Image 1 (cartoon, rainbow, N blue to C red):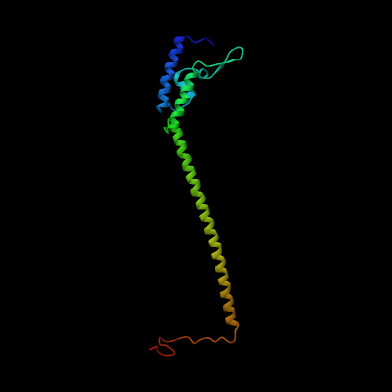
Image 2 (cartoon, rainbow, N blue to C red):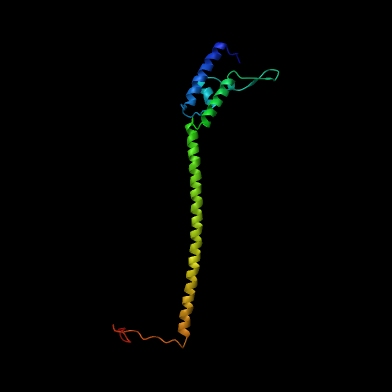
Length: 165
């Protein structure tokens, strides 16, 4: 790859700084994020210029725009630490995460209420079944007992034993 001339490097740095300011203001391209990949693409420079290089002898050397990448990351972190959301997708993700947490809480509460109601229903049905069995037993006892007399049924609208006055 050809070496960058100072004039090209200066022009690229100006383009990177302008793009950096635009991205950090929240003016993101469609489908882009607030990251180095988008910064490189929007600036028209190769992304590899933001990362350290190695000399032929294996010693590391900074990339031509590495200082700008570090500045970009530092400014982005400062904005995030202050609570400002540069990337609207991150705000959407955070909002959706909080909604998911709220919905999970609601589902847990509804599951607990449903379990409580199911337990109540089971208890009520078992009590009704026990009462039904008791009624059947008492009816059978009445039918088989010889010492139980049937009271005469009232045929007219008057009282059998007189008035209460």
